[in-house]
Picture 1 (cartoon, rainbow, N blue to C red):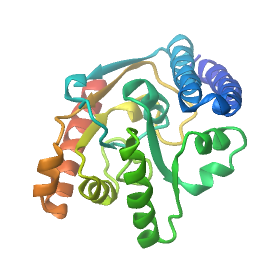
Picture 2: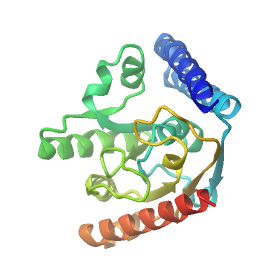
Picture 3: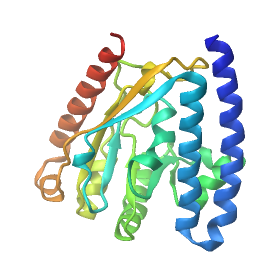
Length: 242
């Protein structure tokens, strides 16, 4: 039964992504807010389908930690689910993502329309420079910036190589950092076809103010963020097994 439900969801997901990607692109001449409206519509539609077809629910914790001003969000990366959910979690933002995603028909075009920061992984130094330059511009425009410090999805209970690009951007832009942990991989794991029923918990951790970011050494802050994000993600993953 899980196979059939997952198959139905995957078909629905593909159709919804194509439809809403077109709507995002067509609405761009009417302003960024118009495109963002359809991006959020995609999130709600996909998550509704995920709940109905696969029995996966979303629970959000720590919303009191969200600041009023734009910031850098540094999130655990385990699944496609946290990327799908992000538009309903925080104000309008831009992604930091690999440039190859722009080449996906319709969906990649929508990402480009929504001002994603697309980097080339083969040149880390150039990528950091690009993230800082474009990230500062977007933050000054009032948009948040979302980055997955591991760079790629990791299996539940494991940690990728955390990179300091998000901290570098926050320090140069004089903004704070909002860490985010979750257990999405326990229900929709990396490269998995089967979606397991249950409740995905997304947990925002205490906000690190712009002043605290400025006063911290980059390496020490990176270690602190990694420990906190991994600790909470592991705690949530263990809770999902009960």
